[in-house]
Image 1 (spheres, rainbow, N blue to C red):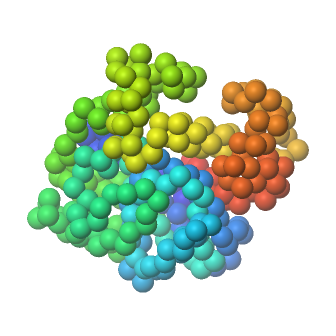
Image 2 (cartoon, rainbow, N blue to C red):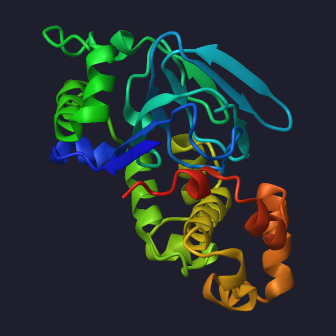
Length: 280
């Protein structure tokens, strides 16, 4: 398996894009054939070979297709089919960044995966730059710096058309607050009503403020746990460190969030963060 995560270099691009990421798996790689994705407030543009299949499953839905696609923000756990070799180049946008962008012909909505022709995104804004998917994926595997420079160049004309408003500005300020700040106190700190704050989150991200906080907390928790072996984890200490009232509170939270108790999670290790890591 080969993988990496690199932030964009261009300042305008980095305002909207958190990072670029790449995963390439091979037939003989050790790992889990059906890794799980924990909920995410960020949207991902995933660039793949046109013939490569994708398969995302949750308790209620199955989404299948081929080629590049949008993975829009989602508040549930997805199970993916990675039983065959995969080549994936991703653009991870900041939470709320897609709100001000023209995503035509696709409409932004949460819990949605939409097949996309990459040229439909880039060509209208950069007539002189044609996105060569095969060349881009080859650069991702062998020339990381060249690949990220190409992505910056392709994305810049599109991102320069973004229209941010008071709602996106408010959401950005709220997400920058420390996680320890209670939701009930956020409106006062941001000089707005709680109702205005909640309305902006639903408009910009499609989720409530509470949902976004819970998803970000889960992501931080799983990232932390991925660094330790099962016998190295002190669950009482983890509960205290992440602001849970006690260990049973942590158990209920994980069971509700990912369908596993802490013990089940630590034993199975079937999430993307555990299988592919942070790539650094």
